Length: 534
Image 1 (cartoon, one colour):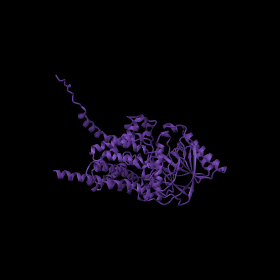
Image 2 (cartoon, rainbow, N blue to C red):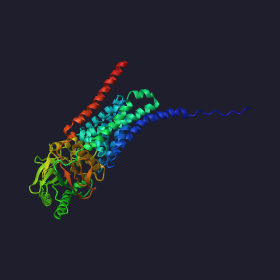
Image 3 (cartoon, rainbow, N blue to C red):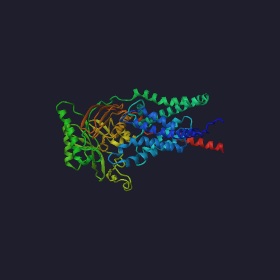
Image 4 (spheres, rainbow, N blue to C red):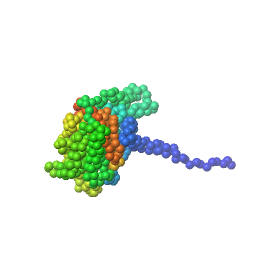
């Protein structure tokens, strides 16, 4: 009798392999979108790796390419959360994770609309062009809605150096961001085309010109930035001004930094008096003007004579006008975040009231509603915004004022240049956010603004990082964090306007129109396809 082997149970492997592959194909776009968001975050300061941004958009483009709008929305949300949750972590300092995560989610939801639109236009010829326009349209929306907008995290603000930066002088932050995104989407399209070449009809793929177009979209923004680099304006056109930036420091970090408001004022007076002593001893030349940071005098010097006398003493000692950041009560009873031009002989003169206030910080929208979620809303201020741009005439030099958060808004910065600013000043108070990434992200904005408008940018900060930024966006001098210091520099005064300044909002409008045009074409194409099928 011949022995026979027992029957072997059929293996489950052949049946499961296609299922596993199906799961991988389903979740691969989610992984790509998350990786893309993290890469974009990593491109931002303090790391300063601007070249990571195009790689991020290449991955995101591959993830959403050819997807349905619903999938694009979901992938955009994944991308936005992976990007914005770590980027905005500084908003949770001292107030806990709830406000931080709520803000990141709200911004990611707006960004997910871009994912939806990009997926929709990705079926069009030359899709990287239309997709880049959709992205800029979404950034334009985020810069205006809700509560006056929150432009923090615009792609351009992660490009304070690198080959794309010179394009800011042509079309401002919209063109700079568009170039980065277009190069990334072009790279993603090129990867998809090369994959098709390996696995499909090579003759057809080559014949439709997609490879050439994708390569052009990838390379053209890089070439344009490199070509523009020698033309970034940097020279002095009206001589130079010797500028002193005072960083007095604060007694403590966090939301309660101003609990000792008099100490903050005293620190800035003390640092200015040290500068005056150095001038008296001949150790340094007398500055033409002195810049103090935002909130350097939270004691209203108009009604508190001791504060008035201290500031006057500092101005007289250094022998130069001081721009003082103060919290004051206006004649109508409203509270203002104000910069005051303090003359060493005449005392307080011209003023600039911060125009674009920070929601949930300097004022609280829907306070009673948000109090349901956190009692910290009662720590927000009741400030009233100013109405117009003001350039201070400080010993013959026109200084354009952009107070802290305002640096994120294109129109506020442009208005100061239009008002005659030869040098821009961004007095800030970052003590609230302690040692977080916030101050470095804001400094990157200031560097982009320097190139955008062809102006040197001064950044006096209560607790750091204070900096002197050249018109080409490079940093000439900077301080450390939470240490008193003084920066003195001979700064070029510039009077001409870049093309970006003269063009105003038009570059953004044109780029938004590209995105809207792509969406309109996709709608028309979809309707025609449905009509043909019917």
